[in-house]
Image 1 (cartoon, rainbow, N blue to C red):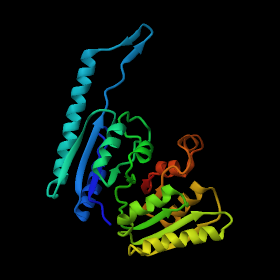
Image 2 (image 1 turned 90 degrees about the vertical axis):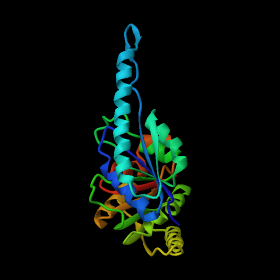
Image 3 (image 1 turned 135 degrees about the horizontal axis):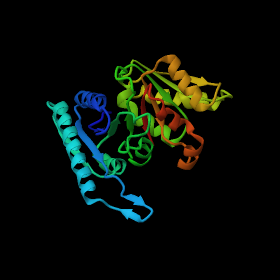
Length: 271
């Protein structure tokens, strides 16, 4: 198994060098087409007590500024992709998350840097929305540019459709890892959990990947998995996205959102 087309999301309002470097490296290793993507939307019209105010000159200035930034992002992409067998560019003045979800039809994998911690980047993609609706796995890079993708990998396992999909989608990356651990949280350490983990390890072995298994019996799901990942100093965490309804995950947090919010690790999510 391999990735034959990789899309890299470039945020025009935040540094994207790490994402560009990582995606270019993966495209070169897998001999894949690299698709560069950047998008930004125009600001919403100003609303006053007198009603909606639209300043045509202001909007046009904003469009020109966005188009200039998009051109700069494309130039950076072209420089990074030089020498690859095939590279494509997509993007424009549009809602970034929506356009990325549409453009994902081009690729096997989406690579993106983590959104800004302070949330002030109006044009950052909504990683959770993309993971849920793009129909493609998403690799969200760690803030630490030095954390690579070939060290230890932790599969955060739960016997759900999303987790099964994530394991299958992540096989090309797991095959590059120096060590693979498949872990689940089960306070009762049930026989079912042990059998489930053993089957995942057997599945991975069929792809030439040796994995060990671990049942975590203490702590809540998110806390136990993140604490275990921290103790092992893993580089990559693989998980299914949104095992429950989106509303429940949003209100109560959930393992997926906790993992997406922890920028110390590279995170691979699929639904």
